[in-house]
Amino acid sequence: MDLSSAKTLNNGVAMPYVGLGVWQATDDETVQSVKWALEAGYRHIDTAKIYGNEAAVGRGVKESGLPREKIFITTKLWNEDMRTGRQMEAFEESLKALGTEYVDLYLLHWAVEGAYIPSWKVLEQIYKEGRAKAIGVCNFQPHHLETLMASATVKPAINQFECHPFLTQEPLIAFCEKEGIACEAWGPLGGKGTPLVSNDELDAIGKKYGKSAAQVMLRWNIQRGVIVLPKSVHKERIIANSQLFDFTLNEADMRAVSAMNRNKRLNMSLDPDNVTW
Image (cartoon, rainbow, N blue to C red):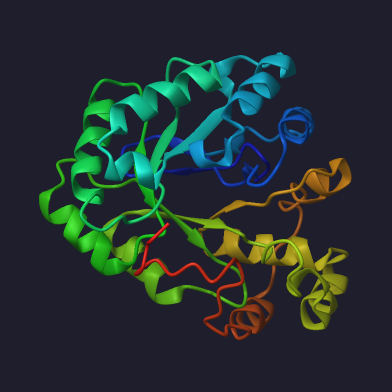
């Protein structure tokens, strides 16, 4: 396995296991990070309308010189566009900003009460038109997915959610796997300023493999079948975050990482059951 290693989604689309996240990156940082990542072998970039850097992602992709069809691009429909019925307009704006005629994955960003069901209908239309190769959701709990699937004609291909050793999300992952919905981790390293990348236990596990705590966390999720989106604007970390396919955590170390679970959200404590933003 290497950076081209991909998970096959429930509609047959191949999605690379490692992607570059660009949340909170400035335009200049985004352009450069995308170029560094693609140069390092990444073929998967994740952005969102609310990040404000879709155009910068598009620039980075273009300046990389790689053919568009070689790169898996994800973006997301923001909450306010769901609430105000601007789903299709928002999608068109994202395409224009990215400078592409299609995206590989289009996601509902949060389960906005009263808006995610009608919004999904718009995503189904976009998917059937071929302008999104796959569609899915972010931050959905099992009950959100059950409600959505009760009226959906297209099952979500992906559920993207916060997932790291302090929030292992095992019940949610089990639910998604049972339903044939792939899982994708945002904040897989815990996020900026969190204690995980300097955790002594993860560091000790990493030393056994000649790897960092960050690489252990990413590899742990991959071995669970979870796609990862590490974010960095530093070239050396972008490269390091991709070096995950030359080692395998043994069963004891996998269990040790999972045992660190605290059911603790580290990223602004955003509650998927109370989406008010």
